[in-house]
Image 1 (cartoon, rainbow, N blue to C red):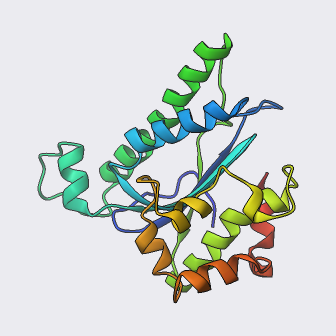
Image 2 (image 1 turned 180 degrees about the horizontal axis):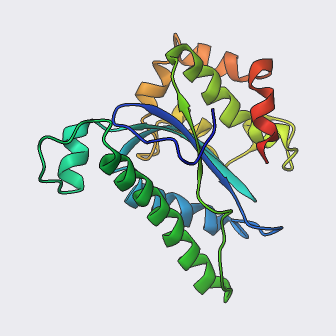
Length: 209
C-alpha cells in the first residue's frame, strides 16, 4: 500500500522512494551519489536503520526500519512522556525529517549546478511493510531496479550505486548489513537469491516510475 499520508511509526519497516521532477535527474555525476548518501547518513540514519538502498539517475529506493520510540523521543526532544508510539506527532516529526533530507540534497544540487526550484516530485512516497517474510524479497527488488529499468546494465553486479556491494563487503556504515544478511539464511543465500528474477507479485511495484 502506497500513500504519502501513511503514518510513520517507530519500529516498523517502510519502503521509501521518490523520483526527480519532470525529466530531470537526481544525479548528474558520480560525486552526486556520494553527496546523496552523505545527506542520508546525516538526516535519516539517526531515525532509522537502513536495510537496503538503490540510487538511479532519476529516482531512489530505500528500505528503512524506524528506530524505537525512546530513541526517536530523545532525538526529537519530545518532552511529553505520554505520547504513544502511533501518535501523529511522532509520524509528523519522522515525515518532516525525511523531507528535510530531500530538501538538503536539493539545496546542494541547486547550488552546484546553478539551478532553481524543486528537484523531487512532491513529497516522498512510502509503503508500509507489514509482513516480515516480504522483507528479503523487497531487498532483492530494490537491488534489481537498475536491471529492470535498463540503466546501462543487464547485470545486478555491474551497478555501483546500490547497497548490494556495501552489504557483501561490509564497508558502508549507512547500511546495517548484518541485519540485512540475517533476512536470508546466509551470505551465499543472499548472493544466490539476487541472481534470480524478483517475485512476480512485486513486479507492479517497479512500474511506479
